[in-house]
Image (cartoon, rainbow, N blue to C red; front, side, top):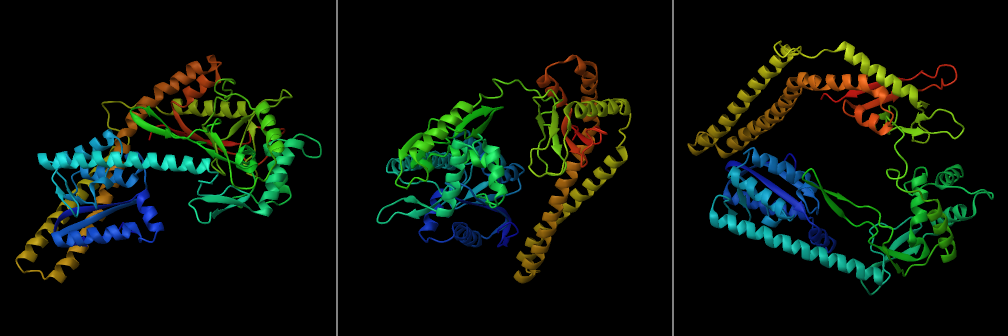
Length: 527
């Protein structure tokens, strides 16, 4: 919406950062108007009053706590680090960072070390001014406190609504529709008869079987597809979809709270957020009508508990040396190992139902991968550190193009600066200035994008020999030790050292006549 918008009101290079928060969404729901557009008009007027040139706008709709959850903020900080702007306009400093102290420190240091101003309608902050720096940091601190207070209030309000039997989700589960409770806050659920009949059928098939034969999630999905019952998404039913319905206590008349709590942990210095299923979440009696009886719910729950296996990583050791590596060329899904109880060799198959890709014996695919890696080892040799790289000519061309692009970009920036001089001296009229300035700024932006592309391509080309130099010794290790390793997990780890992924193609069944009638394409880790 705002990506290509620029405003040439005066001098310098300035950016605008817009972010819609949770509070803004609530205000919009009460008719306050579209937040980003409203803030855009405020900052546009501010830029015009201060005679500032706005060359880029960063806008995102996210109430994420951390910078990692805000891609536009990450781009802004990267550009501020590169010293692209004289200042950044924002409606309030709190829009920049509401995360923890590390996020706030990152924002403060980025603006301080680049000397980039933070301009709000109320105040302009110079991060290299001691008093402005303290005021800015205090504003971020208070913003963090406010954020935590809002989070506590929302969490407490959601739990209170659950205790009252209200439905707090934004989307009603299959079989129900949301409706607003009259004369009080909150929502509840109303049964959709056609969908509720399907839910009862799923519970009944799982509890009592199909034609007297016990069935699982996948067989129930197949039966629903066979009789032409559309899934909630409008497509086909899957085993995962039927399992989710059977696990949802809403159908027995309950409201759940804390089903997926956020869990944070540090990995390589970065905060990783996950939302694992909490099987011991709190249940409250809901106001809505149950679709299945308590007796049927208990029967299904007991059967599911008796069939539940432990975690595969703790109970069943990994059996597939190609786990996570082979993808189907037709649908892109990761292919899976399928064992057979009759003693037949395990196969590698695509898990997508209806995909035309044909399976092959896992051992054959594994051997084909090893043969291909051996061919690499005999084809390639370690680059001579004293010799010119094989792609030296291409590197030279890229370097020449990069130098030319940098010179053109510098010239464009100097022309932009001269335009302001021409305007002040009266050589340019305002109309002429804005017209020619817009053309030059567009040209400058195109050159900046082209320069970034050339730099990335040159980086890949200059690093290719180093990548091959690192790769070939690992290939030698695979050749010498792979057959001596019995653990499939260890084999898998060894292959992942050199292979990014493998694309598998097979369209005809040749297991009996020609089981090797398939092709693979290996993508090495050299990019």
